Image 1 (spheres, one colour):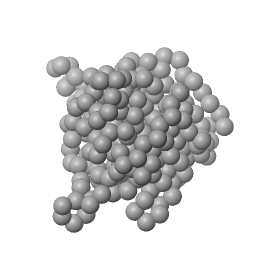
Image 2 (cartoon, rainbow, N blue to C red):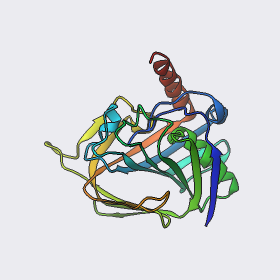
Image 3 (cartoon, rainbow, N blue to C red):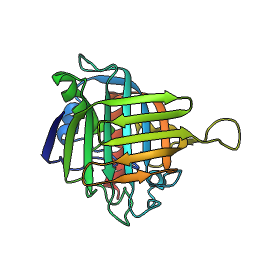
Image 4 (spheres, rainbow, N blue to C red):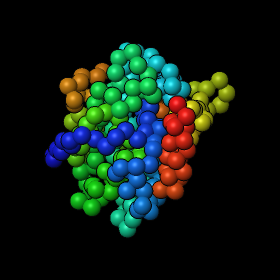
Length: 246
């Protein structure tokens, strides 16, 4: 297993809640946006908050911090001419105590990116560039690791394993009418989170970055999406305008 620790991250360009969402074009993210890309995939997400995660609504987390994970499984896609089908990329983060993820963006306790070890060198670089959009840097530094990322679907239970560091196991909950609850267009929505299905975890664990998470019955979400660089350029420009009014 290879491990890379970055130096200073780029100036925070976005807010990713419980985890994603404000982006400003600039720095490495702006450079990567010059490359055409398109991704179809599935999102698995969980955090320490009680369902549903209030961070998506700019509110304080349910506990002292929001300890969160996002995993993207690419079913079809490319970055430039680099094929990415069948690969995955993940992020684990933690917000500071007693602060919302929105207000504390750029000061999160850590920001760890996990890249599918199956990827070759070109694919790894492409996934790192895409992570600038999917998981905008939220702490003073960002760490990268190359690990196996796998998912097993056992009925309604989705079990994702991120190397030796984390497990995210969750299932959807029942809504008042047929089907699972669906969250649509929360205040911090980004292109992969325009809407998502609500569930709860069976287990969320993480043992990297000095952590030892062991959560049960906490927030869990999942979603299928299709996004491209044009959607993110439009979204990031809109977020930049909103941030400029703050």
